Image 1 (cartoon, rainbow, N blue to C red):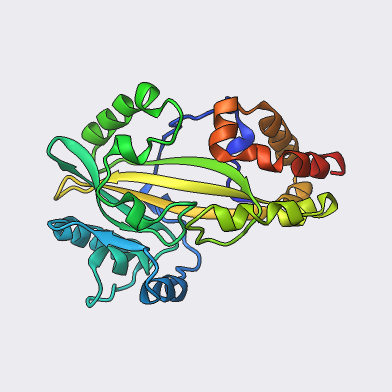
Image 2 (image 1 turned 90 degrees about the vertical axis):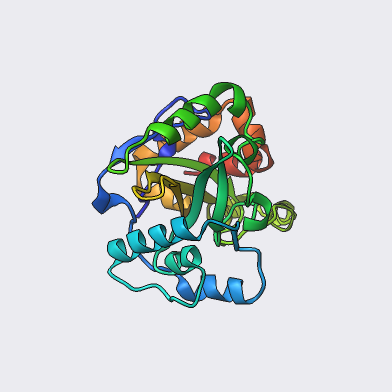
Length: 265
């Protein structure tokens, strides 16, 4: 079943698209993938990082996640990483440092072409630097939201892309994109995947930090054939995305393959 389809509604461009959700909707359940995350962590992959002074807020995250999942986190691990083992989501902790919101701790085991090492310590502006127009269009709005959001309000947003991989941990784009040329157009429905990021934002009541969660959902393009409405909406979105959106997501690389899939669907 396709759980999220953020391409359903135009405009087909970058958008903040936040909406409030209930606390019971915060973490969407499913396999916490603790074994997969631990294997990456123990294998030396750059999936966790923390700045000095972030442990108090990390502990607050741990308590929240333990309450939401009904499980206890491993006390021998850094609190944020231990909390991430209890859920399917990646956990990103933002704190106000010298007047700027910065990423002070992060457990990122399903990153799409970036790692915890790439992002730790960066400001909101720098984290979103590659997004076309972010500083001009969205930075002030996001900073105000981080400042003003109440601890009793949880916000959700979603975005999407297309990739030729269903792997969760994709630290670099090169190895994935090098395989595109080998895909036969008739196999595009099974070789290409819609990758959806479902993100949530909530303010921590004690430290005032902000927790940003990322849950990855993905499914092959062929799954769209089971839902004509979503297939039609995807075709409209694919053909209607703005040039900036297309360039940032690298969608042009899949153009002929996706059109081959749509032509026979």
